[in-house]
Image 1 (cartoon, rainbow, N blue to C red):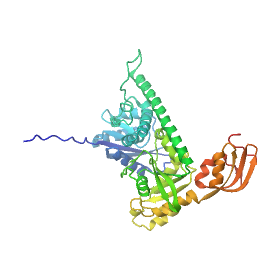
Image 2 (image 1 turned 180 degrees about the horizontal axis):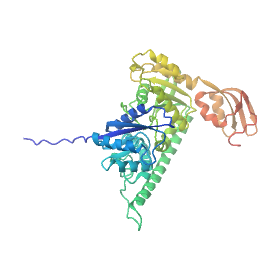
Image 3 (image 1 turned 90 degrees about the vertical axis):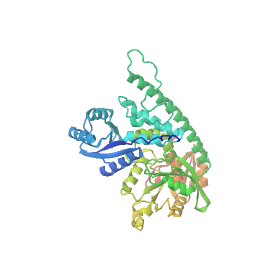
Image 4 (image 1 turned 45 degrees about the horizontal axis):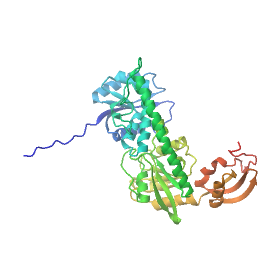
Length: 455
């Protein structure tokens, strides 16, 4: 009789207890209950089972343990009752808060925060070398001040560091009188420096690629939106592409660009970008600088909103806030109210449109409303003109030619060192001409305004 070969078993999921705090002077876009529900989804995406949650409203965080001493005792009892192995806070904890909480809760319970959880999800989902480097950089910079105790859930290290962020693999002998902690910190700083140099090369490549696209005069559209709003599904629908899609948060991290045919025999490049979320860790924004530039350099933003979500407006506002933070708030934008087919009253979608400027109700999965969305994108890219006066130095010949070629010139004045052009440009080109824009007082241009080169 053949011997039965034992099959590998899936390790049990960790049990997590969630903690949410509403601070009196913090104006979060999502209410505490919605934010904790989102944290629960993040935990599930990371492979953790949520066994309970605790909330507290405070005027300010407690100096030692973030939540009050009484709540810490309550949390300890609840964690013991539910057999929780990890406690996840919905805010970013300081290293001191984390140390004191772990000391109070005991050795069997680890404490992490929302930032660490999101970093772990990014580590699981990064696929390209660039994405892995970006995640690894964010992990190292987050863990550097937290080396006293690493949490085992970050065992999966993205990138080529040879160990998880905060590990000490490959560290040499210590010098006399030097602690292991100092050796670890120095090793991590060296690794951070190497990663940044590698990412600089990636950024240079992206700059060359974007410059090439601009020379081709093919406009770019960046798909932005809250995570799991349906951006990848829409790109697959528009370009007949095969971008990875999953019903989970942060399913795709690495930007994907596809050519899309618009009405009127026009073409545009559509780029799927990483989904946003409220309280997006600053470490991630810094690490994903090169990727987020794809958004800031776009001609048009296509904002995907999951209209079936109970707090769709809050998610919409969270994305607008993040766009401002990364320097993309000035770019023209249209909005796709996705998943309209999930509404109990589909006619309600028409009424919801009034809350979102330049919007179309669509179903990326079923294809409803896609033709209207493409028509709106085509109008914004090629037909919507905005008045603008610019003072361009003669050495900016490419921009002068671009204004004549794609804009509507009403008045042209030659001055010493440059040319002043008054007229209109397609909205997608305004960002390129912004540094040379003539500031106006009412409708009258200031004739004594200097250009950036002369200032």
